[in-house]
Length: 359
Image (cartoon, rainbow, N blue to C red; front, side, top):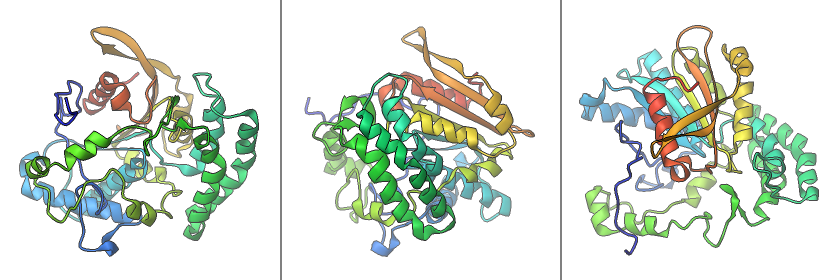
């Protein structure tokens, strides 16, 4: 095969749900804008765009309005998903538009609370759960030494956004570059990065998505010249957004019956499970004490008809109402859990959207 045909994925997330993939902000994927000034550069713009997009979607497809809605994002979606969900939640409260039936938020291997997450890069590099020492002892010591300044700059960024770019530069140089310099895959500590820019060969995906018949089938606008996996101009526009915290916008939702799932494949370095678990334990919500006192329990799922241990999970409810926070460490999965552990990922999704308990 030339690698340009599709096959059925029995573990696709649309097995028990409708999925809508949205290329956003403008200028990424198949999306487009009138001009470069249309490029968003912060999460309030991202949330605003998505809120009104959803309003228009439901106006065009009212048959979906009664359905539960879940907002999921991964990686930088750790910024997007909370921000989009928060804007929908606020829109419902303020009656900005038609009511949207949002029920939950999911973030996989996300960057959500940089202030806390950047403190755990040294630990993931040297003291991960697989015993893989990815950097030298000297490099590790140097990473540890620079954590306080990185954290200080990241905290300053939250209150004075003029510090955000400096925080980004400093923290990347001293906390992530030592790992990148090893040549290992930042998305899977067990593997070398190799020659591809993203450490995985996604060439066939780009080729397939740019085929004329693919574009025609998906009704892609002629304004989109070419689908690319990354847009450097959009990336640059978000330079002051990278180190911003977005976990705090989850708190009002948790206190108002919205359920939140934070999951992380545990061989990912760049948005690692250690840092993600740490910020969930620091989150200042009414279920904090219950969540922090909860015991991590083994999460099992069925793979090829056999029950296997898929990870470790903890969960707690808000003090009032049905809002809940769940953190799930997924064994032997990298940055993209559904790619590495498709059956586990689908079980996780179904458990969440069917409102079943993880523990």
